[in-house]
Length: 331
Picture 1 (spheres, rainbow, N blue to C red):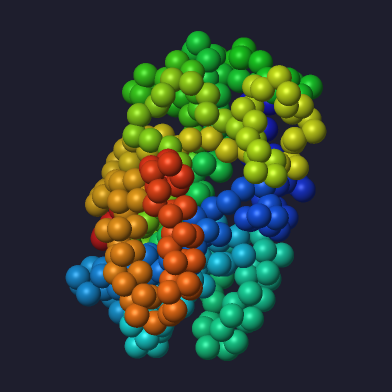
Picture 2: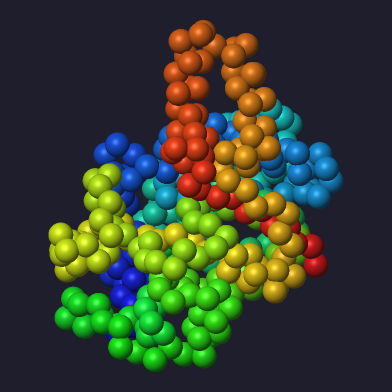
């Protein structure tokens, strides 16, 4: 089978890694910005408020998360909106796109625990059921989980009997991407076009913010890797037994952000900003939020939160490795 099929089955097939609830953070295979500090969601909440104040988003917009896991990020956003602009909670709505019913139930349970009946959580199985004219869409680390093809010396990878072989002639689309981004060795994401078109075709006006690891340029090497209990193994590591890792560990790769941006802009979705996570969170108002915190808690609690935030913005940690891209669209 094509590697993209293998990858998709690994994460989303029957008993796939993402089809069941997985712990994130210390008890899981990896950390995310969401598991590092609530101020990640707080910064995004501040960004939402700014977009409303600027007049781009309506006060009755729907805040939609894609790839929500248990719903922590959306819940953090709601908490900070309550702190910064509580009146907006009377007009804003909150939703998650989640294809798996058992994960929708976990998200509902978490919101019930966090907010009782004060916040209604709306679920959508896909983009086709979206309604409303104005959306703020947030996605953290979703594009690194899109299926990809592996390319080496103009050949596509296939998987046979647990072995990866570069034997297949690329199709027309893959050839075009290879040529456009000068890819001789590495990953090519599959599904950007379908994703961008689905959002544009179902929402009249939206702002979309996403964070992920990657860069604007392809580094002409394989970045694809496996995460097991906070240890990282390159896919082609001799120590890694592919059949043993299959569906039991996370598999991921660096996002080619230029490819993503080009696809969105081809759909008429305008790029507003591309930046490192450090720059983006500061621009969103992270430091202003810390100033507010300093006036409300004791010094030890403040310093504790500062240490957590360092993970988000330190260039040696998530600050430079992760990137943010912000899009806007209005039909």
